[in-house]
Length: 99
Image (cartoon, rainbow, N blue to C red; front, side, top):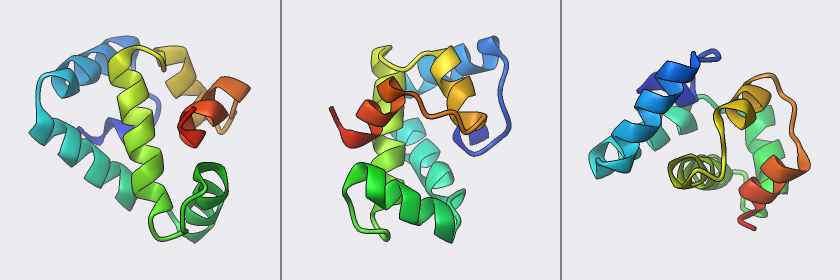
């Protein structure tokens, strides 16, 4: 469950996480809550800029958008690795912007 806040997972761990969250609203909620807790003040501010949300709400918005993209298949394992490596591609920026 800590995939969104942890280090880079293996592809198998990523696939298992996506499968789990596809079938469980409780797992999705827990994943978002864990993800939100991983944001420090600087990350909140940056997320606010990208998501066009308040710094307070930005982590939840960003985590929800990322999780939705992962579940739908729009965000891939490679995209997730890029996020964990702080490499924000145009595709990822669009995901976080809700586009």
